[in-house]
Amino acid sequence: MESIDRTPDAAEARAALADVQQAQRAVRDTPWPTWIYPVNALLLGALASTALLQEDRNLVFTAVCFTIVGVNTTAGYRMGTPWTLPTSRLFIALVAASGLCALAALLVAEVTTAAWPVLALAVAATVGYLAAGVVHRRSTGSPRRTA
Image 1 (tube, rainbow, N blue to C red):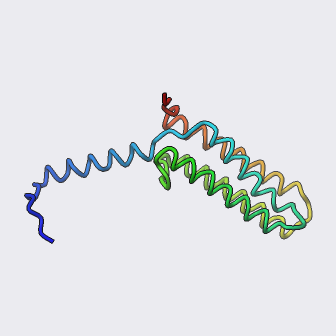
Image 2: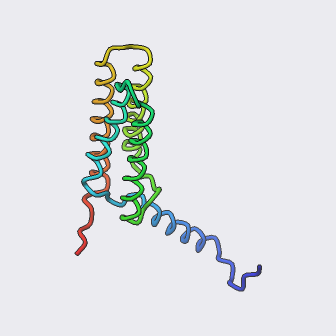
Image 3: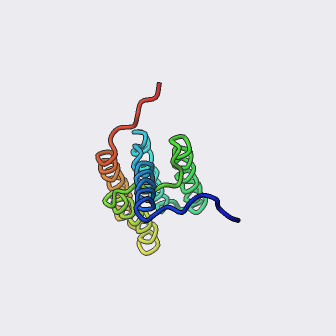
């Protein structure tokens, strides 16, 4: 397919690419609704706590996973930014650490019968995500008010 548009020179191409990068950053740094931070923190804690269940552990674990994905996807679509990751590396690192705490709780439950390590990891996952929420809010500001 041919294009009848003229080819931009190097300066015009750089400017166009800079505009695209600026637009991508604006989308990635869109403020999230305030309620999403504590909801995600509690859901991660619940995910880690499923390791304490004796019966239906896999079913509850799967249900919590689907809830996490569903809540975040729905919120992302309502904001107009589904499937985007924020630019804050500290936020991403804290979320990853929280997820690792939740995963570690599941692994620890397989090797010990003590509940306290699982509970400690569940609390760490929750607190870690709350800290990530603070980092994210500081890097993006408050959500815009819609009339």
